[in-house]
Amino acid sequence: MHNERFLSTWWTLKLALGLVFLLEGIDKFFNLLANWTDYVNPTVLAAVPVPPEQLVMGVGILEVLVGIAILTRWTKLGGYLAVLLLTALAVNVIMMGKFYDVAVRDLLLAVVAFALARWTEARRAEPVTSDARPLEASQAGLLRLNL
Image 1 (cartoon, rainbow, N blue to C red):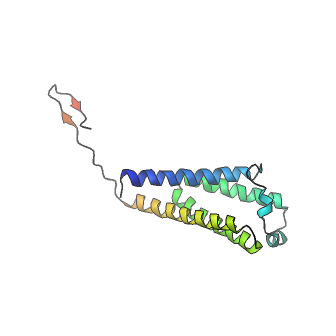
Image 2: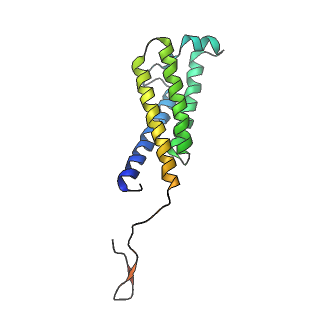
Image 3: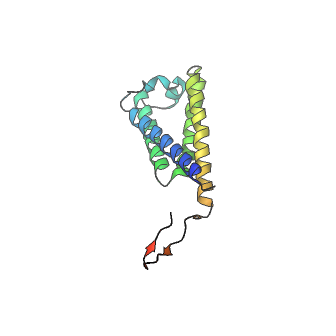
């Protein structure tokens, strides 16, 4: 399972998902990508005693932490946290009765995050093997690599 395609795909998912969480989390403070308060369900606002801007910033902090976890050695944990967060965000907008496109995107990203977490488990569970060729002594008596 530890071949070049596996590792390059794993790294692609890790970097893409981690950076998306990190950047969207930071953007919750600047609203450059979207006006994030538009996506807050009024029912949630009625239950949480904070202004929508502060709630969105709180979600942004969570997203930044999840992004950092995915990008560092806590990829598996970050992946599973991303699944929970993305599913909650999708349910939030579905319950509003609008932004179904965002809900579908978030659910798809949740599947990607789940795949990354599971892939990380599999990657760590297998023993590391090497197909590198051993060093051989050259005729001059120095070691050389047979690559």
